[in-house]
Image (cartoon, rainbow, N blue to C red; front, side):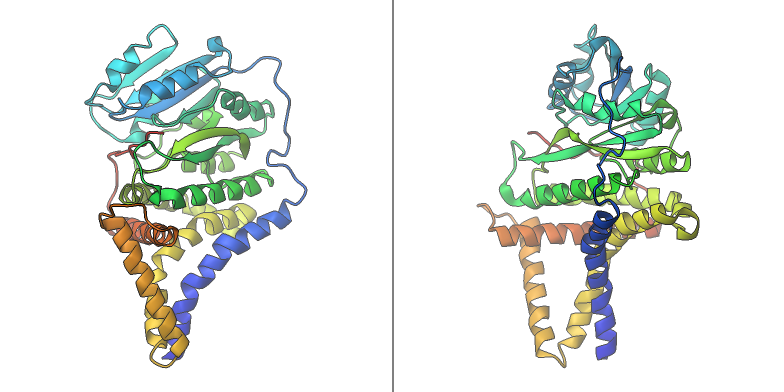
Length: 390
């Protein structure tokens, strides 16, 4: 029984240690002395034309702010097209966007809801530019970020450039979601390490850019474009890099419960995308890139989903081991505290340790929900974006 218990405990523990410590260490060794953008270049003699695609659904509270910041960007106005794709919004989103007529801001309204990816597919026929920038209706893009994002395309081998999320506190939120900011910072660091090798395992959905030829490929509606396009770029022999200076401000989810729904949705789309491109996880054919997908994506998602196995292992081991019994009780207490943080109704800000337990519970629950949906064949098509307001 103890052998079985040790195996159950080892599964999530090994995944945790490798995915979050071993893999970044390996990347650090591979990329030692290299830059995040291997062939960084100066400003081009002439900036290329860009189309900024902004999917939106009932975004009346944030869409004007997002457009205003993009219009104020340090980028030639004549070279910039803003295309807002409204997923059959029922609030004032469309009316607000139409108010920018004459400023190179266009509205593409979907007649019925089809989800974010379907809207992006429809946008492909309305692109007028060489480079396509993707962002969201709740994201703030600082003035200098568009040039930082576009500059690497002066290298003809670059197909996709990922921006860098900077998590900021939402206007309507407690401090209980601060774990999201820590995790986002860690994720951006890992992506920067990957970029030193000339490939990344996925772009940040908040702000990224690609060549038009990559964007015009229609994707199944269950896939997420920021991830899938990176995989397409690899298969077409484009380099994919991260521009650390191309920052965007992303407001944290207003609550742990909202973060749970967001994580479950994005993880479901991520798993669907990874399965669709599962051929790329063959290390015999795709070497380093297969290792990146397995390490950065699959191992992380499996680690959270296998946490119950580790808990079961501790329960078995606690019969014969006092230390295992102590760890089992502590794990149950952490789960209880985290569950209260997520589904309870605390009147005051949670202590840091309780908020951390809540974020762990969010990650575990979201992973189990996502794996359950994928294994049952359920598909998340309708887009319910997280309401964020910095």
